[in-house]
View 1 (cartoon, helix red, strand yellow):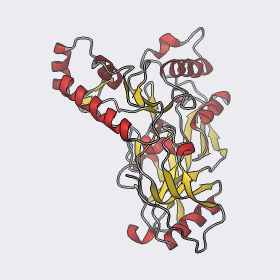
View 2 (cartoon, one colour):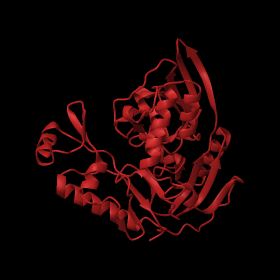
View 3 (cartoon, helix red, strand yellow):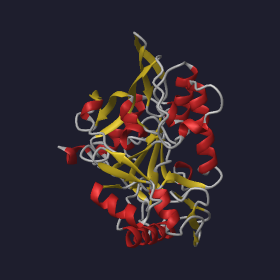
Length: 358
């Protein structure tokens, strides 16, 4: 059941804050829930203004970037901020190392394209991942053996408790597999405004993961790797502008060596990769082998070219998708004894009013 969010608060409301706005354009699943209030911010001043207004009105705050890694399942009470902070600048270049500061609202893929065009190595394996730069550290996005944490130097945030900007070093962000403190203990405390990347002009190509080297045609160059990654992703993953989806819906599960040994005995073709003393399983393979690839369930389904992706064909809300998710999890667990975790962030992800943070 959708919540009633019709009550209006007009006291000192900034002129660019809209009321009762459909969130369909702001999430790539295209679910038509509403935000009680919504503000698109493109400057630090406008960001501080709406945050202060929300504090004064005791409104919870939810932040959205590109909406490509979100699962919205209800109307959002309070203020939804759409991060549209833009800009890129080089702050240091020395000995082949380049520190590049990129605003959180920048499109991630366009940033990767920019880096490749400038001859900067480090993010080429992360091409065509949908979303914004500000979402990269939250999720610690990754692909083909590279993660955002490998290239992030530090993150600038707006501290909601003290209403000030500050930098947090990457080593302090709690980065893990598709995880960070921004998703955990810091959720509700910080709004990411800028990410500083440490890139290099010296070749550091990573080609050993997922058969990437075999996808490169001709000479192995920075641009060739970028194009190969784009080609593979275009072939395997649906364009959200054509078929509504949030990319990979499940994390690749990590299991201990003993469980991996037992599964390999039963399923010799099991797709897995060593991660330290453990093993990472290919969630898409598990789902595919359990018979879900291409299956439709009401108005949603499993993408027929990549079982890791759930798609929305016609639903206006998340009910059918959540039911499909539950069925897939149960099926995979019964077959393999492995529990799948969701990758998209569920909203509402509420950032508390200032007095609740202290």
